Length: 165
Image (cartoon, rainbow, N blue to C red; front, side, top):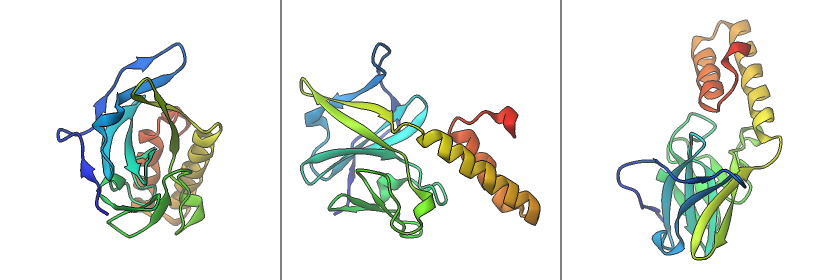
């Protein structure tokens, strides 16, 4: 099943309820079965999928090479990145291809006919930052400019403290 794009102009920043840190995505009816909506959660591009009667939200960037996951095939709660065919569980962000490359997933809350994103799982960002720092170290040891650029870009795009680099 191919997902259809709900927002033709790209990711949009949506309203944030600062009292409970939920991001208002849209009306439930705005994301039809088999479709998705692109939004931003505090700057991070997130794809909200409607699949098999449930709503899922996952970082829209494939952790492998950054390709938009919303462009992939979705079937039974799994999205396949169209670039290198890596598979991710929409509920957990778990990568079936290489376990240390999990994507960040977000809880989706339905309330009063609207969809909201909750914050990612506790500790998830810290683990990602550590992984990207380790990738950078390995790239520097190997003098691999591609790996260095990839690690720095991931770290920066994920909101890491660039002064640590």
